[in-house]
Structures are given as structure tokens and as C-alpha cells.
Length: 159
Image (cartoon, rainbow, N blue to C red):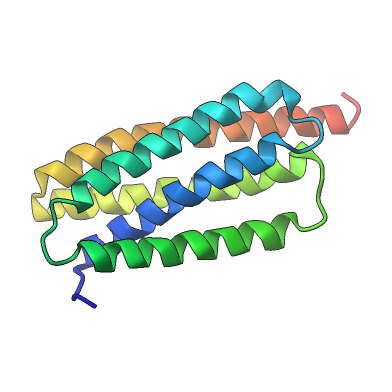
């Protein structure tokens, strides 16, 4: 496997997280009481697919490291799927799904902010541009799932 730079490793992680996010949003959309949030979840899934596309397009420019980055991304996707399955095993209600999404989106936001900082520090304009876009998307996702979680919690509590 090619030696990856720390930035390459983080790009692989965000690529894998974007891939996992598509499956996770679809999973949560199928849970009980998720009907009011399906449009939001489908939009998040589309954003995750766009994030994957943009990140993978950048990876295509990295001669000699593409395969290693994509292998690490697959590993990250698998780990994220394992976490989702462990957290949501036996859970059917959307609130549980949104609780998981709140953690997942916070994690994605944090990863992208790390990529953004590394890219700026290294003067990598292409990754800076990509990460600036992705950080905005992830902040929107985090705030959206947080608000939805609180709305579901209020409903569940009888409010």
C-alpha cells in the first residue's frame, strides 16, 4: 500500500463517512415516525452522494495514492456501518435514528474541519475549496438533525 500523508488519510476517512452516510440516512428514513423527516433525510443522502463524488474526483488527481485512499475509505465506511448497526440494533423509532445521526453528523463535521485546517496549513487550494464546501454542508446537516431530534423528543415526551 502506498504511503499516505496525514491529509490523504483524512480524505480517505471523509470519503468513507460520506459513503456510510448515504446508507444511514436511508436506514433512518425507514424507521417509525420518520415520515415527517424523509425529505430532509433524502436531501442529506443526496448531499452525501455529492460529497462522495467531489471527494472521489479529487482522489482521482492523486497519482500513486488513489488505491490506498479508496481502500482506507472502504475500511472507514465499514467501521461506520458497524457503529450504526451496534447503536441501532433492535431500535425502530426515528428518535433513536436521529440520536445516532446527531453523533454521526458531528463526527463528519469534525473530520471535515480537520481536513480544512490541514489543507489551509499545507496551502492545498483544491482541498481547501472542497473542505470549505463540505464544512458548510455538514454544519447544516448537524443543525438539522439536532433540531429534528429535539422535535421528536418533544413529541415522545407528550409535548
